[in-house]
Length: 422
Image (tube, rainbow, N blue to C red; front, side, top):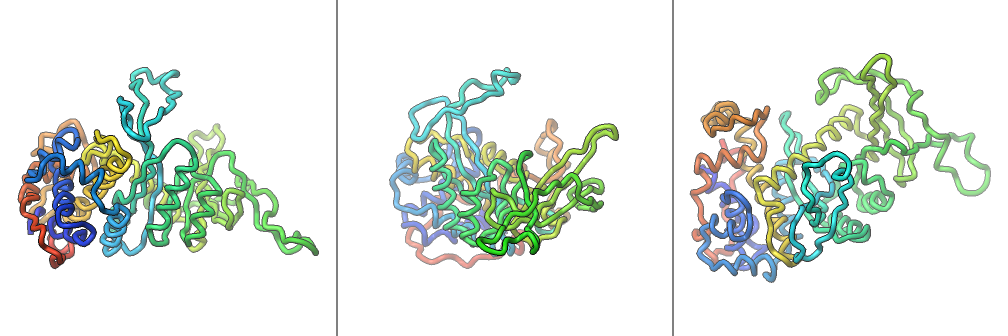
């Protein structure tokens, strides 16, 4: 089965979420995102999709059409969880820099580094901030990140917490990985209330406490939940051999408490010494899922960086920040559809590139040489390289939005991607 037919089959999983004409525009927009070369503006997407509707119909589809992007996220997540049994989420904030000032929600980003040393950086710092969620898949020794959900943030902390509440209502319980900028009790309290678990890097000045022992509890009054202050520098460190690290690492772990989290956490500390005469450096990660092993905790957080590269691929190859629409709803829908396109193409293509390399698919070095890519030497297939290879072979051109019958009310019979791709 070719890629066009396979992707068309998966698109029909979203059929019942749209009306007849809106589903045609949904398919056209996704195909325009995949086939567009250069900047992914609405004009470029319209020309690449070969849509038979008028240009203004795509603008109405983004701005005024009646469809719920939250249900699209839930359908995409249900499709992914059919092949990824354990949900591991990665949450972070990102931004898109714009030079104009006519779009809704545009605000100024202060760039303090520009004044110090980065003299080659752009002076334009007006843009939008987004809260984004990705689904991390660790299967068969391959780490993949599927962009899942995005929400535009307005200036102020209240907007970020409101967006986080909307996210928790959409996704089923699982482990959410944060960077150290999210050490906030307000976030963690909402997360634990929804029966999620967190895994977060600790700040350098963060304070942890041991669990109080029985003789430390008062005879009357409220029981203590914080014991003595924990000093991880004097813990007993052991050598661990973890797959994501090139050499054995020294790690110590304890179950402690912190004022940033309302529940006990497992704190894992890794120490390194660059030179024998230099002091130790410490890297701290903690989680509320006390059943996770030390190796699993360090592996999960080490793989968190895949989210950063996934956002970069979405911006470079799927038009994450190329929008030129003005309304808030149109901006959010454009970015959300770019996430859907990135996840679907990765869901269909990546297993075939990883598992079936010897069955008609070229090696990475051969594909780079055939596409005349000599300035880039990657070690694995990335999302951007997969999309570029599919465009180069022309396999995605087998489908056009004009082939969608708007009268079809039932979903086609789907084929599992790992069987169809083989």
